[in-house]
Image 1 (cartoon, one colour):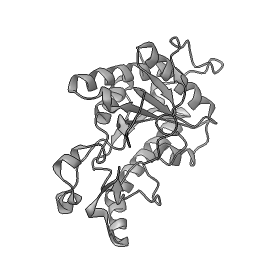
Image 2 (tube, rainbow, N blue to C red; image 1 turned 60 degrees about the vertical axis):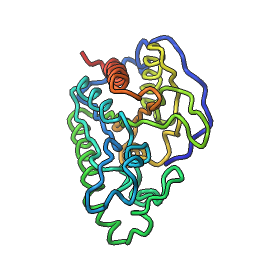
Image 3 (cartoon, rainbow, N blue to C red; image 1 turned 90 degrees about the vertical axis):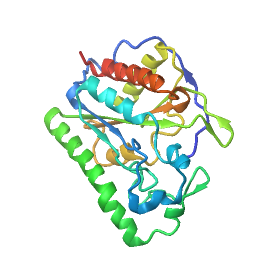
Image 4 (spheres, helix red, strand yellow; image 1 turned 90 degrees about the horizontal axis):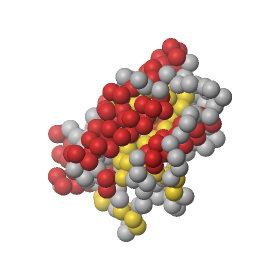
Length: 264
């Protein structure tokens, strides 16, 4: 997992008036939603990777709330939604194939016994069975959307822990993007404005940098900025403690993305 970055300036501005891109409009058919860490499931043959049930319910195994938020957003947009079906501890769908934490030996200082000595064959097996199918399905949809509509706008949903190493992460939301990509910057600003207008504490590129290793970063390397737009939405788990809170946040995020996309 990327290191927590220094806190950035808070953003509390009035609701946006538009993208500010010379009248350029988006089409909901250009959108695609993913939730790489939607599940904490580990196949039975791995015996929970040697972890307790409580550990598998914790953030080290998945992103609580991300699935509900992704589904709500996709429903609002009427666009495809791809969800990871296994725990990130088995293999992390939000990492590049050669990243050292693709199969993490520890997470948040908690050792993962089942990953302590993964052979090359086992690594290749997990990539083949659990990683490649998801990544290729998303890539196929990105290419299809670009062919049909000229551009793909990819929203990757995540959640983050409120406290890391004794440090409180202040902020309800973070929108991760590449500042060098103009449309990503504009979309991020609009989403932050919309969430701030609802009373949420929103930040740019927080608690991670949008250019750190991740699914959107990998796709940016394949497509020019005029064809691919990738944003990660990070939600503080502090506001996702109950089912009603998750539903409330999911509704607000879905509505914000829908407004930016021009959904009716």
